[in-house]
Length: 292
Ligand code: PEP
Ligand code: MG
Image (tube, rainbow, N blue to C red):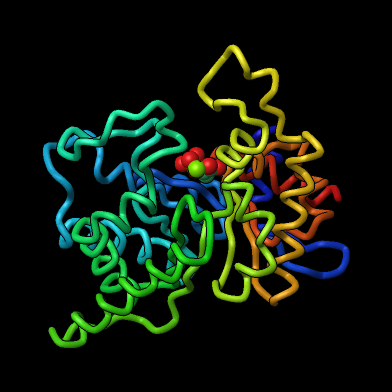
């Protein structure tokens, strides 16, 4: 069976209508890219960059981050690489970055909220991403976006970093795509409006489900409520996909649900353009997608 699946490694998933579907991998460490290639990923749909910041004494420098992003882009040889900016807070903390103690960290100071507040930390990452962008096809996305203002503020910082780099005589690519994660219900509801401003969406179902159903993704006690196929979750996903397509933008999914074989037929029917998952789920997902 594993051998049969392996045959799908270089198979491109195409729908009955002739639309290409991207089946990509999620990574945490740059080296994980090798496993995604081994399993035939069409690209990287989510690079969780917070792992570069974890298990160390201080934040990675611009140079270190640049090397990590360049490595992944080069290994993917022109295939799309979606890198998510720092998503710290919630369940993930850093020893050198004290966070306020909050009653509800998942509803608090995390991800883009923290980055827009601590711009010096954010700028280091944006500069590293821009500098690496010349080595492949880079797409950058911001986590935990609740409204358009946050995207606009983030893009102001991107523009600032571009100017700095120009002054320093460093190059970056103009072809970078800039997108947002849809993982807060408000963003899903407003998807058609948000889509006017961004290049793409990626649906983060791990958080979207917990926020929609008010069921902590870490709590076993309420895990019975945490249902990816709940009709409310499905409606939000459909709204997100329709919203993106109404503005001619593409939409991916990088939460666990994208690799869930029970969910795949529905997501395909809704018109999801890209599915991103752990490397080991890629071949099974391709098989499921090809059956439909
Ligand atoms: C998600 O929320 O679905 C997601 C992909 O991000 P993370 O699991 O890192 O929060
Ligand atoms: Mg998330």
